[in-house]
Length: 102
Image (cartoon, rainbow, N blue to C red; front, side):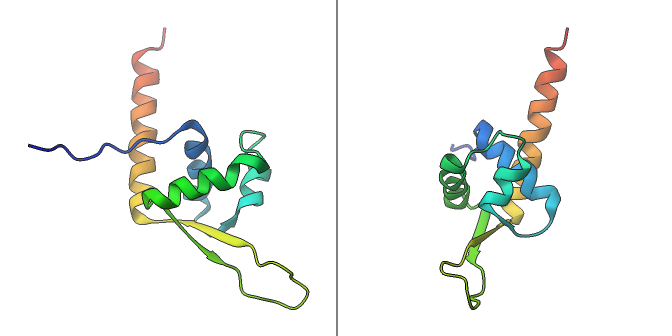
């Protein structure tokens, strides 16, 4: 019998998801860096977002082309699977913190 994969998020993935899920809108990578309070860096945010997209937790699309924009940015949005995985991990972490609280 096989068991279903249990969702897991690295600390940086958890930070990115904790910004994307409640936002309820598409966000740019550097916007996530700005709102992360120093937890996400310019050098790692896109690697983190690519891993989340590979897992199916987020989707991305290029912003519409506009005059004066040399390179359109990517917009990132949480999928239904991503939100469910994030909520499961969030509950799991909260439960573990409570269990080990002194």
